[in-house]
Each structure stands twice: as C-alpha cells, then as structure tokens.
Length: 464
Image (cartoon, rainbow, N blue to C red):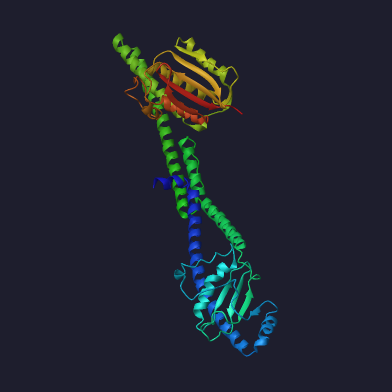
C-alpha cells in the first residue's frame, strides 16, 4: 500500500487523468481481446469451410479434364500464378498431419523464417486438413519461397497415396503481410485524444478546487477574496459555502472591531474622572497604588485602540519610505528617553519600501515595548537586505518563548502566563505586529536570540 501511494501522483488532477486513461485502456484492451478472439474463431471457421468446399470443387472440375491438359488448364485459369505438380509431394514441402498440436512434440522440422506468412497459415492448414474428410492433403513449403500445396486427385492405393498424387502449387509471395503500423498509429492518436479530453475534463473539475485553495491561503494571510462558483454542482456548492463563510467572518470581524473600538472610547471618560479623583486623595500610598492601576488600564485601552487600527486594511496609507533613515530615527527617539534600545547593525545600501510609516512605527513600538516589559534589556535591532526583502530583527535577553508556544503567541489575546509577566497586557502586541506585517505583504517569525532571549524577525518586500 505504501509503494502504491508513492507511485500515484499527488495532485487530484493527475490522479483523475490517470484514472480516466487507465479505465479507457483497460476497457479497450478487454474489448479488443474479446472481439479479436471471437472474430478469429469465426473467420477461421468460415475460411476453412469455404476453402474445403473450393478444393472439392476444383477436384471435381479437374476430374473432368484429361490428364495431359490439367496443367495447362490450371495455369491458364490462374493467369500463370498457380501450377499443377503432377507426381509427388516436393521435397521442400511440409505436410500438416491430422493430429492435435500437443501430439507434435517430436517434430524436429526447422522453424520458419522470422515474420514468415506461413506462421499465420500453419494453424489454418492444420484445421483445413482436419476438416477434409477424404484423402485430400494440404501442405506448406519449407524452403525460402512460401508456397502452399493442395492435393487434387488422390490415388486410391494406400502405399502410394501419400506421394503419387497431383499437387496444386499456390505461391504466397503476393499475399500482403498484415501491417500493424497504421493500426498502432491510429490507436496512439486515439489515446492521445482521449488523454487530452481527460486532462481537460480533470482541469474543469479541479479548477474550482484550486481556486478555493488559493482563496484559503489568502484568507490565512489576512487578505480574504471571494471565489466564483463554477464546475460541477458539488464544487459550485463548495464555492458558495466558502463565500458565505467569508461573509460571516467579515461580519464577525466588523462586530469585533466595533466592540474593540467602542469599549476603549467608553472607558476614556471613567478613566479621566479616576485621574481627577486620585489627585484629590491625600494618602500617598493609596494614591500611588491607584495611579499604577489606572496606568495599566490606560495601557490596555491603548492596546485595544492600536489593534483595531492595525487590523483594519482600509486605514493604511502606503507611500515610499527610506527604511535606513526611518529606523535610525525611531531608535534615536527611544534612546533619547533613556531606554536601553540600540541599533547594532544596519545595511550599507539604501533600502526603500512602499509602506505606511505610522503603521510601521506602531509595529516597532509594540515590539520594543514587549521586549522591555516581558524580556530583559538591552533591546537590540538590526537591518539587512537579502533576497529582495528588508529584514528587521528585534531581540532581547529575557527568557524568550519556547518553540511550541510561538504560534500561540501570535494569536490575539494570547497571554503566555508561564513565559512572561502580565503587567497591563492583554496579549495584543505580537498579534498587532503580525497583522501590520501581513498588511505590507511581509512575514513575521519568532525565534531565539543569540543571548537566549526572544528574537522577532520581520521580512518586508523591497519597493520595485
């Protein structure tokens, strides 16, 4: 079973072509074999019966002609193609005995030449000898020239009945061999047409599935696209269900964005009043604790707002961006506040992107903030260009994230309790960075830094 799976093609289209072509070949082979067998049986029966009747008719006709005129009669009647051998069976003739083929084991006669017409006539001559009930015999020549010998007027004496008779000599040189090349050419042409038809049929069936697979990849990349239902009824229904699923997801995403956008907006008023009331409290310890709690709440609200903005493709405004200068400015802004953030390596050549400067700034700020809050300083950044991609890495020296939890860490509202401290975090930082990266047709990957911390690698396509 494993070997069969390794031999079969992987794609559905190739398997359908193979199934269609294999079925056609098997059906044609079975039909051809069955028809050929019964046609051969029928042809041999009819040919043997007609030939036996013809031989008896010739014998009766020659019996009415004087012996001295029989040779001329045969030669004139056959237009000098046949002749009459009027003594004994020639030494280069092979008489087919009236016995089954399995009783001829001791026949030491040399085999006929390759592609000799006598190969096809041997079974026919044997069947003809078995059909003739009188003493008539049919023989084949053994020399280089293919001929058939038919006894016309058998003698009645037993001791000379085998040799003393008149033999009708029929040359076989002018009988055309069955040529299989045109038949093979027609068969191969038909198979080629069937193969083209099966390939077109398979393409017609699998094309909607290929479109669905591509649409599913785009959906996974955050760029959903509807498909046009086509093909058989099953694939049409599948396409309609996929579009319905996209509509449901779009509606759910809209509700989610509305909820995430409305909740922080509604919380701004209570938070502002809480700030005022905290400032009116005289207890320093109580005031400091409340101030810290409100700051955490404000940070959560800002994360909600940033995620809503970053996950909305309609809010992006793409423009040419000199990435080298922009990144140096971003790192300098962090360094000016005393944060342990530094750019340890940059690309010597100018790197240009088509990007949203504000969205990229939000992405970088989220990654640096996560590294400072959940990792360990210093936070190090690098910039490289390779394979048509601008590659930015942000790494810290904290505990990092285990390999089996990295996919989970990129999901919205995912908080890895055993990996990071959860001070004022709702688990949207890495999810927002991943959404912004995908909106720029890039990719984000989590890995392990050289110092053992978390390393975030962002790859963005260069501007053409």
